[in-house]
Image 1 (cartoon, helix red, strand yellow):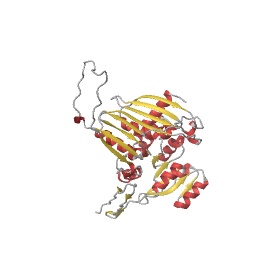
Image 2 (image 1 turned 180 degrees about the vertical axis):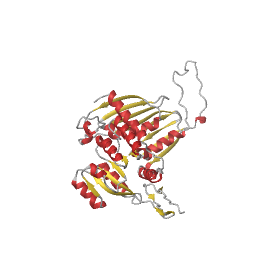
Image 3 (image 1 turned 120 degrees about the horizontal axis):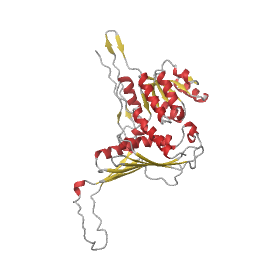
Image 4 (image 1 turned 90 degrees about the vertical axis):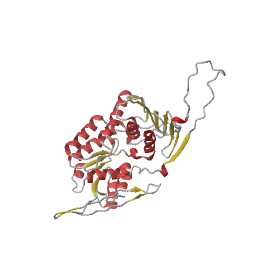
Length: 379
């Protein structure tokens, strides 16, 4: 019996290039011949995310995915998709879900439609990759998870920032113990931007928490661990149009003592480091493109003893010579695969039954956290 082999990409260069080796060998079981075919994909929503991220990404992977159908309300967008991919186009969502070739639906419609569109797609027998935020309410997320279980379909969420090289590097350094016990992780996203699109409106699930917060709170929860944190927050509507929050300060404290501090602001005149981490033997600071890691080996310093005598020189003592070691890390030189890996992981799950990498239950955690913040500090 011949066995099908499907090799996935390997990183080969710093500019995110990959080597693809797709080998399909037919499997003979009597007269049965099996072969891997691309997953038929339907894209719901051809806006910035649907078109610029999902359509363009899966179309680069013709051995794994094939765009067979698209759904949108804008005729010009549908025409563009039909001309480029020779796919079927739909303006009615229920009709779109009846497409005969579609196996996977990528839900990239506005945030307030994520839950109803996902649930309908699951009930129609499709797997679903839902854009972030997973939902705009915890109850919606719960219904999505339950529907996927009842229908026996794969449901995952596009938490692509889990794959960001800077996040992977920070996580690796923390888990290695190189900088000692970590006390504080600060994640910031500062800019000044007076947005006026639909993401500034509560009725459409807008706001900086559902936009950037869906990424950074997801990262924060992964760094905090499984225990639910204490929450302190400040939310405000400042310079953007609409009525949703565009400024958020959130402090999360885990039961074991670790604090994660998040700042997301659309009204910041000054930007700061995206990452600032304090450990007992070092720390991390920097941006998504470059991080500096500074640390020392614990056994490289002599033990320090309390001196109860009055200071002879009326000061706090002379500064110590710390044997610091430093690493400057650049994302351009990283060996982490980047967020495009999400499509390869999902293909393994659908075609080979591999464990789902981004579970909907893990995404639900930040949905519950956003709901808690809005309850504590309504805007």
